[in-house]
Image (cartoon, rainbow, N blue to C red):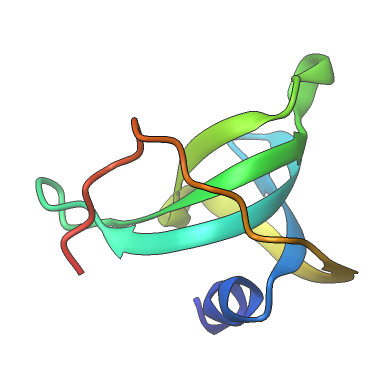
Amino acid sequence: MADLRGAIRHERVIRFTYEGRNYVVEPHELGRNPVTGTYEFTAWVRSGPYGMLPTWKTFHYWKVRGLEVMPDKFLPRRIAPQTLDFAG
C-alpha cells in the first residue's frame, strides 16, 4: 500500500490488474470504507478494459494485482461528487 500512497502524494500514474483486467489510472484518494472496513481508492481511469472511456472509478485495494508506479505525473483533478465518503 506504500506504493499507492506514494503515487497519490507525488501525483504519479499507476498501472495494475484488477479482476483480471488491465488499468492505467491517476490515483487521487485512498480511504477505508466505513461499512466494510476495507481500503478503497478513487482514481481517474486513463485506460481500462474494452476501450473504456476516461472516467472516475473506485477500486478495492485488495483486488489490485501487480501495481506499478509509472514515471508519468498528472495534474490533480476535482473528484466527482459520487465518490465514497471515506472515514479515514
